[in-house]
Every structure is written in structure tokens, then in C-alpha cells.
Length: 466
Image (cartoon, rainbow, N blue to C red; front, side, top):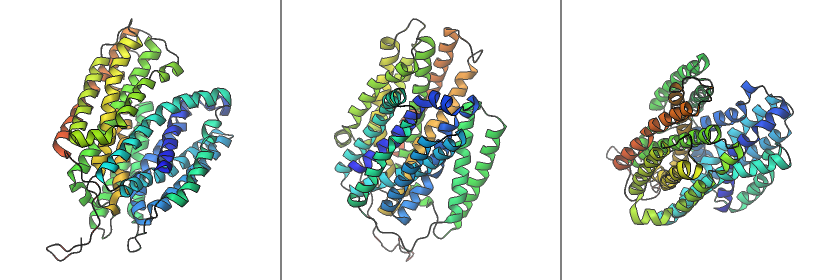
């Protein structure tokens, strides 16, 4: 468990530290302003685009194997990032980093869910998983700032080397070895169409977030729809599909994924607009604005650490519903922002409510999304819920940022009143996310979870082995 949580912390940390180091990276490699976003986009596109395929590959090729290969790839590409001399080298290395992360994340999560079949222990571990994810986000802001100011931007990548090497060595000896499904083969054609379709969809989302819906984003979305439609058509007819659509008959899995998507959208919306308010209206520096989220992360850590007790006392459905309500109330509280406001009165109360709400919803959402899934499909389930978290925030950000921008008379306006009005519109539009999450939690998820389903062969009424 310690090995898996350490690697998950490294993956989350690597996302956050780059945002802090971007100014130095741009100066050091002479990256044009319009291309700087590729330091993050190159990672996001490959990470989000390969999660489902990697999750299914874990089930077929072995979680232990995928974890070690992915960690090695992530570690080597981190070294390449730190040694990059030109912008294209950094972008390419970041893309490979995303591939490694996409292999590691579902492998690590499915190793956890299959190693702790007892529901109580599993819920406790999932709470720790959520706490590590939250802790990595705020630690990335702090560690990134210290490393960049002390040793330079290259060390935000090179710091991954000792962690990755230790994780590979420890993982080789202590992680459980699962059996390879020798009778199953990875659907290569399905994997290619799904990967290309998802990558193009992620690229379109990232492009829309940065440049609005332009020609390139539109073409990406159109190509993604065609490829994903071809993928669905092929999978329905394939004897051994990459994604078994029967898995979506599991209402808890569907509910957990829907809630995870909506929670990610609400969280990123909150971070985005709150950061803008603190920097453009309250005149905080970027570092101080990032530090302002530390109390919120501590709240998420505290709630996540109690996940097993809370699930045992109230059930997954109640926690997800309560988290959605608190998130909605927090968004309404943030609408009270004012020109003469302060962090303590107009920012922190709303952020704390949302932080507690996210803490109540993060791990239970993942528990619901993997509940009742057979061991030999836990990799696929882990890939699906991780994809939901990754893409949910990106989609929510793209949509709600566009809504807020439409309410701003001039995008570069320095008028605090106009800025606050656009942020408030974004928060109000963001209320859709917790409202839908509440509905999904109440109608799709179970009150109590049963853990992963055992993989037992039996014969159905038609005489087919299931």
C-alpha cells in the first residue's frame, strides 16, 4: 500500500509543480507564449487518452507488470524533461510522461481494490488514496515553488527520479503478482480507435479551454466522434472486446463515474475562479494565491482519512449526497465576493465548504465506481473512473470558463466589478455540477458497498460460461 500511494503522490505532484515552474521554463527554453500551454497539454492529452486502454491492459497483461513498466517509463521521461534543451524536447518528454502515468494510475488503483477485498479495509485504503491525491495537489504548489526558487525549474522533474527508482525496486518485491490472462488477447484495433478518439477529444477540450472553440478544436471533436463511434460498433461485434459494455449494467459503477465527473468539474471551477478573484481583485501574488488553498486541502485530507468510518456509519450514497449539497452551498457562498472583500470573509468559508464536500465525495465516488466489479475487470473499472476524474475537470473548466467569459464585456478588462460579475456567473453555472451529482448519488449508487465481486465461473440458463 505504501508503494502504491507513494507513486500516486508522485503523479499528482508532477501535475501541480509544473504550473508553478512555467514562468522559469518559458524563460529558460525561450518558449513562445502561445506554445507554453503544451507543457501541461502534452501530458494531459496522453494521460487522459490512454487510461481506459491501460486499465484493460492491466486486466489482460497483469497489473504488476504494467505498474513496473509504467513507473519506469514515467521516471525515464522525467529525466528527459529535466535535461531538455529545446521546447519540443520538453513537450515530447511530457507526452511520454503522460503515457507512463496512464499505465501506472489504473494499475495502482486496481492493485489496491483487488488486494483489499474486505469492504471495511478497502474503504479505509480508498480514503487514504483520496487523501494522497489531495495532499499531492497542495504539496506540488509548495514544493514546486521551493525547488524552482532554490535549484531551478529542471528539478521539478528530476525530483521524480529517486522516488521512481525506489518505487520500482520496492514494487518488484512487495506488490502482489497477478496472473496473466493467457486466453485473452488485447483488441489492438479497438485499442487504436479508442486511444485516438479519446486523445483527440482531450486535445479538443484543452484547445477549447485555451483558445475557445476554433477550427482545430472543432475538427478534433468531429474526428473523435467518428473514431469513438467506430470503436463502439466494433466492440459490440467482437468476441473479446476491449471494453465489455455489460460492465455498465452495474448501476453503482455508472453512478460513481458520473459523480466523479461532476465533482471534478466543480473542483476545477472553484480553483479557477477563486484564483482569479484573489489575484485580479484582491491583488495576491500567484504563490500566495496557491498557498491560500492549503487549509482547504487539509480539510479534504481530514475528511478523506475518515472515509472508512463514515462509509460504515452512513453509507456511500449518503456521503455522496452530503458532499454534493456542501459543494453547492460553497459555490453559493463564493458568489458573495466583493471588491472590498477579503480572503477570510469572502473566500475561505466557501472554499472550506467545497473542500469538505469534495472530501466526502472523492473516495466514496471511487468506491462506488469499483463496487461489485469482478477482479478480472478491476483494471478497466479503475481506468474508467480515473478517466472520469481527469476529463470531468477539463470539460467543466472549458464550459464554465466560456460561460464566465461571455459575461465579461472585455476579456482584458481591469474593472473589478466586471471581473467579479463574470466570476459570479461562472459559480452560478457551476451549481449544475453538484445538483446533477446529488441526483446521480441518490438514484444510481448503493447505500452499502460489497467490494469487488469474485471471479467465479458458472453456467447461465443458455449454457454459456459466465
